[in-house]
Image 1 (cartoon, one colour):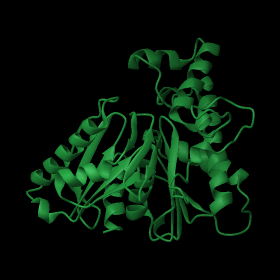
Image 2 (spheres, one colour; image 1 turned 90 degrees about the vertical axis):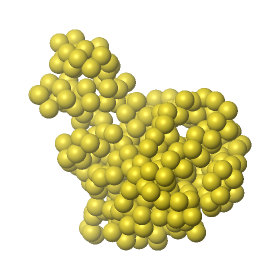
Image 3 (cartoon, helix red, strand yellow; image 1 turned 90 degrees about the horizontal axis):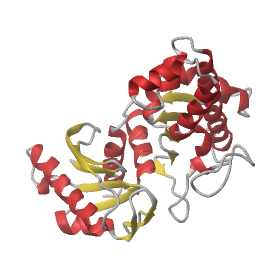
Length: 314
């Protein structure tokens, strides 16, 4: 048995995971960013003990704890160098949790952990596997020969900050034209609002009013009802995603690319469009095509991946 902890911007989630990737028990607490590093760590110690107890297990039944945390991570020494979203900076997180639980603790970047979770459950032993997550930003992870690719300094695979438009939209990283600035759900919401301003009779206005705000679903819900302005938003968004996916294909030619994040729940309505654009832009014209699929684990990917990343290092 292993414990996986997913430190997110909204919640800290944890679960007990067996060797087959099944979550036996799980729980979460609000992240309550931004606060002292030790307070996050104390909550992680507490929730790890809780899910172990809820599973009817003892601490000694657990082999290790894996933690997926956002930001620049030193996975070898178990430190968070900096994590802007939650304000954690230069903190030995793994050591703190180890002292609080008495268990071996291994730290991983949260996107890498989610990638490893999807790979472990849905990778089918792929030699090369790319996970893309579309959320507040565009993140992801790369697994090669069953191992997470981190780069020499632990900060590799920042795929959202590959450039798709040299003089384009400003990104939160400080550059312009990043994939994240076009294919994140944050970008989709911005694109939706712009279309609503230009199309005052669009159904998107009515749907946004019902939700109380514009969300990543607004354009999709309206497009499925035949709203032309919304259909253009969805099509353009799929093109942005597809361009970046094609870049991943051209660099890695992976066996499989899996797309996650909340927007992946749109399923084939989005996936079919992404595939169309990826196929238009990828370099491969004659050999076997890369499989592109939607994620299946959703919020569980971080927990399972963190646990399995720790399992791989015990």
